[in-house]
Length: 445
Image (cartoon, rainbow, N blue to C red):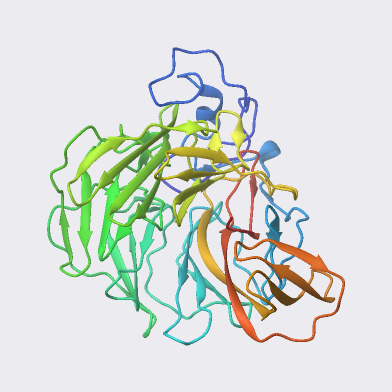
């Protein structure tokens, strides 16, 4: 018998009870591009839609809101070490524990501050959210903007068009009543969400959890969740143009990814990369690419530390690499991070010197700039004045790649700012009924 179940949407997410076994049973041979047995009924039964997707229960019928693992705290202006996970603890009240939200970086106006991180929507066992939360990177502080009009949703897509940086768009997702296929737009200057009238053939309602699937002014939609562990039966690529408020289905060539949900979609230049996902009992580990210039699908070869099949993970692109973190596979929630060299088509498992954060799925990740104060000593190194996690001022030497060797002498001030970049991850859950509200970061190598 399963524990207490709370419905928060159209599909099923079951954790706990007597059918919780995480060891996948034997089954038919795996599908091409998948990882592990073709029938992973243990996990598929336990996480029938992966995501908070939609029914929650926990061992004994109790949900547990996860206390953050003891990672070092990255203070404002401190120099992050390589291969180290940190907790970010802005002042103020952080968002409640949640899953299925989106996280993205809002750049500042030219020459004005460090920008903001915004968390949009999400869900917990009590329902889905219509709120938003902001980290003001100048003040290192949480804030809750007075934005109004967002329809509650989780596992939706968010993006900011290139030509309209003062607007924030959302598509799809779900709430208690079912999946959505509507589009809403926020005017960041007025704080009002609107539901514009669109033209063209809209995609079927679906969950489509991403904040990295837009190129220029266009959002690209492929696959997504229908009910339970099943994806929408829709192989088409959909394109939404914010300039014309038009949906279209461009003609594509080649073989697209098989129907799936819980996959990641990452835009790099004119290309879209699609990795992983789930369909029924099958977890995928394949990687596809489509160049929007010629609309031709390509299944990419992979070498190196190829990650196993997973779904409900997060992804981002930086430089020559794609990065993925977390998610779930037949064994449960994952805490690993990989990078993929786009040109060399090579996967690398990232190793960390610090403890790893709790494994999680249905979280959200974005890339944020991180300023530290530096005093240039010579062309090869920079003396960096910062504060370590216990508040003592120290001077560190930082190379152009971001390495730092802490020195014992006391810093005497700084002459300029050095910009580094961090992966920032918020929230998510595991397969044991624990839901997170922590904010964790690591330095991009």
